Length: 423
Ligand code: SF4
Ligand code: SF4
Image (cartoon, rainbow, N blue to C red; front, side):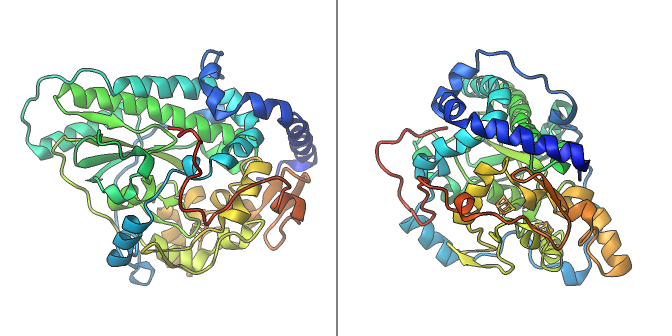
């Protein structure tokens, strides 16, 4: 979405003013001070901050054969097991605790406005873990599954799926021995479309954080519903104690996109994910090949449009997983200095139009809907206030790509000692 000359000027000026306030505001909005922000009044969830909160209809029909690859993520099981054994996964916030202050400093405009709401929803979620579990009524698993999905719909969750708990996806900091059950309920909430079209901007960052808060409220509701039926249930918070995307793919809710994000058939990656661990005997869902990897191979819009070329065009094996490995060393400084960036989400046709429309166009013309058009691939860049149509990208100076005093080592495998674990 191009804002016009005045809109881009205000985007640029607002970004400059907010950037100049970073030295002071970044210190105030450090993650360790977020509980204090929970006492402030919250920005109302109106307009583009509000999730559509509509349940997604089941996907009907199949993708053409040439778009299909495999259900689930391509993996080399032995290599994946070895990586999990020898180099267990850590939370980003533990592994890169030194970068967190820098990240939160740059994102203060989004954090300061949404943090009160986000903090309160996180506190309610943590409190829900300790609420009493009722007497168990034995239920037929299929009936329990139908009742769970009906409750999720009533709560305004866009989609749920169930898969097996996998300790390989649990961050080492959170393997505390109090894990709950052998199942994971993956919950997804759609993010507002208009806010996502305004990427990159502070407004779209606010919408992302606000959607996390709205999803946490719904997880509290679903946790209480499980407790009332006699099942233990423990919701993770939005920061995450495990890798959400592999769970979501295993539960059939989408496939892994070239941009490294979960692509759902309904909204691409324009959604937020969270999980509830439970011992409820829910039947497992299966991974589904929606043809999304085939769409990615023919689309490549995120690869073309990333301002710093951080997304590779080809997948390769990493820790036993076959994926396009994002260059986080190039990406993270842009995320922190360009209003959260996320151009790779904005330009994705599955995010913008949904998979059914993309497949319809592909079957009609052999093209991926919207690619090479300004409506999809164009974006306004907050660092210079210019609009970049397809074929043009901003020049990102070295001072932005490699900012002074910015310590971030993407190859680090063990957290530095002495940093608190957030979560
Ligand atoms: S922009 Fe295209 S290549 Fe990138 S994730 Fe979306 S569909 Fe896949
Ligand atoms: S967030 Fe921006 S810099 Fe990072 S991969 Fe996406 S488009 Fe590239």
